[in-house]
Amino acid sequence: MSKQAHQARCLIEQVMREDGTSIHVMREMAWVLDQDAFLASAGAAETPVREYLAACPQRTEAVTKLFRAAQERGFEDWDHLRQGLRTRQ
Image (cartoon, rainbow, N blue to C red; front, side):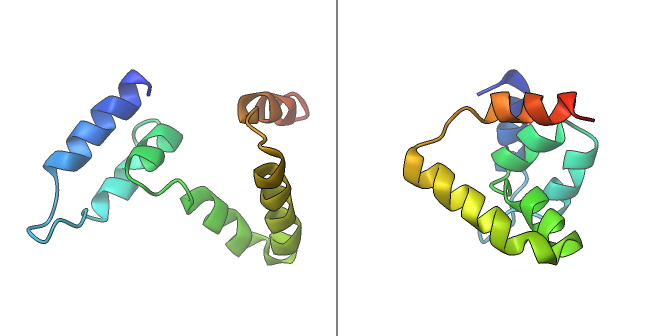
């Protein structure tokens, strides 16, 4: 876990409702901090995926198949995949 992710997790643990649920503002703070690390620490790593699918619903089936194939094959090199996407921009 990165230092930022650890710090975010500590902050999240401190800001909880009395019933133990996190406060939504923590997800909003992700825009100020390292978004991906913060969202993952907040248990909301799926948020960017949901946003992408909401913006591009026609790609839902393809994205689902991608993650299913990754899961079935034990794919783990997501950083390499992300770097490949960045070089194409």
